[in-house]
Image 1 (cartoon, helix red, strand yellow):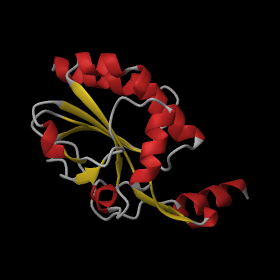
Image 2 (image 1 turned 90 degrees about the horizontal axis):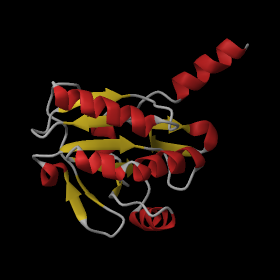
Image 3 (image 1 turned 180 degrees about the vertical axis):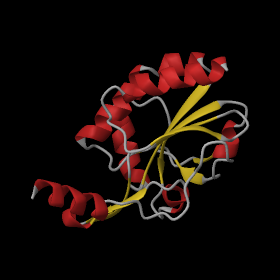
Image 4 (image 1 turned 135 degrees about the horizontal axis):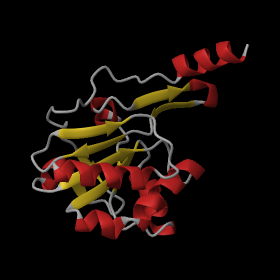
Length: 174
């Protein structure tokens, strides 16, 4: 019975996006508003490494853990010439409160129309919780030329920042 329930939940939570950002391919560009209302695009960060992480919902336990771990490692990411960008399908006003409450020193982007989340293959639905169209917890490392260098799918937020930093360091050493 537990296996059947797990299969059903997995099928329900399957990604909705047909396309997905693939390693070695150009990362899909985007233009999204951050927590201050400023517009940000992937092109703004050309020449830098980008850690683009998708998360389900502002101010939920796992999402807060993930954001705060990236916050706590911000100086290590900056030394690695990398920027961190968080994305969820929440609206800008939710981003503003989330970033302020947790002192996030990086942009969190509002993808309310879900186009960017879909383009990265990270759009998911959980109808059993009456939440439709949320981001799955996926992370992409994008190289300075704008190509996807690494992707992490459906990650555990605990310790994820350190894992991403280690992978970024390995990629830069190549």
